[in-house]
Image 1 (spheres, rainbow, N blue to C red):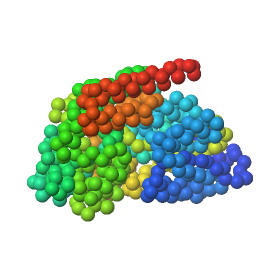
Image 2: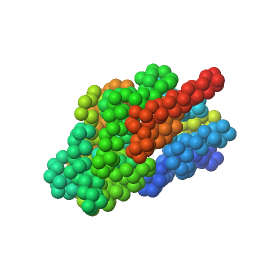
Image 3: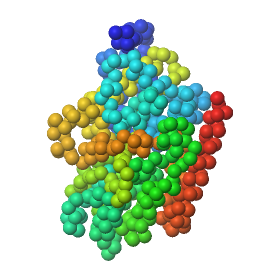
Length: 432
């Protein structure tokens, strides 16, 4: 009862003269950005909020740009009230000591839908028994394929293993027509996901969950196996290497220059809508020799910043709770492709027949829920994740350009990441 009373009486205890502005930094663009703006506006106009709080969304650039801007703002004590941060920023945000763990409000609010949070999502964002932020836009990599091109090549289903992916890619490649079998963005995200898919952790200390990571595990058989697959298909001419960035791969697939694309589920509705051919989706392939693994939650989460008046922190929490509601999650999922964070919403959509009408939207959900509950699928935590990704991507570029062997390039990336981890951990030690 005391927990409920804390929440229900808080607003009535505040004297209001004008709505308190709450600054919300985000990194959503295009249609996703517009929808985020609408959801924010609806919160502002809700009866319990109108006249009390007004959330002001501000676009702050890419995930990396937003995180860097936030770091600078925190030093000047001019940060926002709520910040949307990429999943790989989790450890950095905790280490800033500038956040209010969401768990502090969850423990006081019996109405917060914590029991509905999908277990794989909760496992990623729960650190040392606390949920620090609200997973909001959650994603997975999935395999998209051109059904018309598959039928023409005599293929009736998506490839399930690395060897099948290579074989399918050969059958779908037509050099005369300048068509390749497969593509995906040159992103470390796929390196991380395919390592987890094989049941292997990315860094030591149980992926940074049992303690501060100090070593990158880039030279495991699982890591080498995946980069070898990537290199082999590029050498065979069956993989379109379109470089870093997400748009070129999607453009190639939609233009039917590539028959298979690995990409985020966050664009699933956009891809299906824009395609002039039949599109289907499937889980990403598994290695031929593999331990039981799975995929890791991607996307972003919403963080509460401290060093604000208590009523402003509370208003910010109400906004985050609003974004966790079934209604908001439903509109966000159906309007973007990011999958819901709530089990009850998924069941409701299944009952309504939504996934029968849009089966492509269910692939990532099923893939995530089928993942083994092991450290590999919980995801890695490290304060230098952005640096590590750049180091891995540079290594893969060297491999694909045949400037280094897989082992040489990954060894170089490992040394770089280990050094980044050492410097970061030393810095934190000095702050104690």
